[in-house]
Image (tube, rainbow, N blue to C red; front, side, top):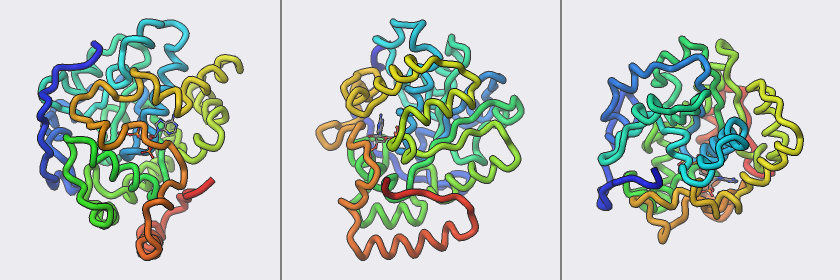
Length: 299
Ligand code: PPS
């Protein structure tokens, strides 16, 4: 399963309103099967708003569970087959639900960008562990903008100013960043099996975050193994690695922007004008005024 048979001419979809969230049909076409997905108690759900570091954490978990036992997996199976993206329904490839159903591994690692209220209920019923990764809004917006430019299965982002306004209005795929990060943060109050982590902490000290993940998952990995993993998931290593850099997907145009773009905290400073930054900060204060959730926009 090195790549898949996708039509090369995926056309940019319209943004639709779906259950109050901006979506595209590629993530809603399989809705009934998605909502009926049968999670198992040992499944691990990796939940994120787009561009928060999903692939980074997915690869860490994959290596923690399967890095030393399944060599072939490491050299021939791209990350999107190891960790299926549950809500996908792209023509010419199995849906995320089908891929997850067929995963031979225990545990199954499953990716979603769904806001908390749309996550299939069996994950909660089975008390599955959830790893949520959050990234500060400004870097997320920049990363999302470049991703939408190069990803022909996403709506056209327009220019940066237009995109930023849409981001603030929650008019991009998977809805408002603000509600997404706060939704999972609040869920922690009533559901203890969520490990909430930050892109900025991973960038600052990946090894420490791997250690925290091990404690949450109940994995006892020796220090040497954790160091090996930390090295393997370094930005440069993942960018070079064809199994983690998304280079086999035909509708991603790497000539416009690579999937593994910069991997930095604070790249927003190269994009926001002073006026955009002031307007964004003011809006942010309003949107985030009733949460205890705090982000760092530089490290
Ligand atoms: S997606 O499409 O939502 O699944 O994308 P996601 O994987 O969540 O986010 C992609 C951004 O994460 C950066 N990235 C990394 N940064 C540092 N180190 C590592 N190992 C790493 N892996 C992925 C990737 O470069 C994207 O961020 P930007 O800012 O665009 O570079």
